[in-house]
Amino acid sequence: MLLGPSHHKSMSECEVSGFESLETPLGSLPVDVEVVKQLLQSKHFHAMTAVEDEEEHSLEMHLPLIRKVFENRDVKVVPIMVGHLNKNKVKHYAEELAPYVAQPDTMLIVSSDFCHWGRHFNYQRYHASENHVAFDLRLGFPPPPNGLPIYESIRRIDEYGMKAISYGESGFLVPNEDAAAALHAFQSYIDHTHNTVCGRVPIELMLGIMAHLKEQGYNSMCRFTHYDQSSHCKVPTDNSVSYASAYVTRMA
Image 1 (tube, rainbow, N blue to C red):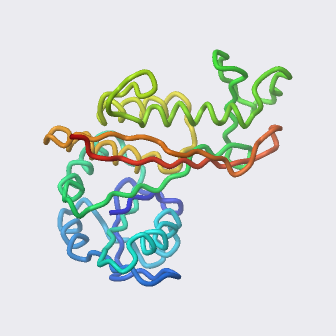
Image 2 (image 1 turned 45 degrees about the horizontal axis):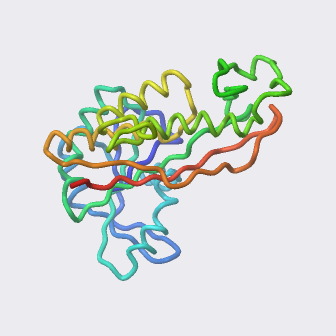
């Protein structure tokens, strides 16, 4: 099951692929049409048009990797484009998808970048130091000469978000005990920083699913493994996109 944000269509629901098979340079990936049919019958999911399906890169970019990882295996995908869901809808969709994710033969993949920083993205939040109040470089304030490089400030903004998402076996580095706490922490983080995480809602939906499964006795944890930026912003006219990878695994 693959969750990705909608980049081209403004919507407040979730849509599933209408194709029966998806082509990649490494071979085709069949869509699990039975699961898609079940989701459509719930009336809360809608089918993407062919154009919407072909244009949405958040889903498409993962397909070759899935095909490679599951090379020579019988695997099917359920691509789901996630709209701008409010907190109540996140909870509702999480409850609907949780039984599928709980199946031992199901993997949930979430597609998202992290901070899109720069004038091109209309986001220039800046922290001069760890304890410094953030300010907006769009207002014309130059970074202080003894402050953090812009790219380090971006890293700190992203790290706050990654810390909010992480959960399980809580401690100093992972303050959230479970997915429900992480969901609340991440939503509060977005409200506070307005970080331009394009897959914000798919991440929330993943955390909501794991929170619902926790109520069914399914304990899990989330950890980040890697972080990088497309370039190092040094002056306010620079632009960059951040990337991070994480995994969720079941705990005994």
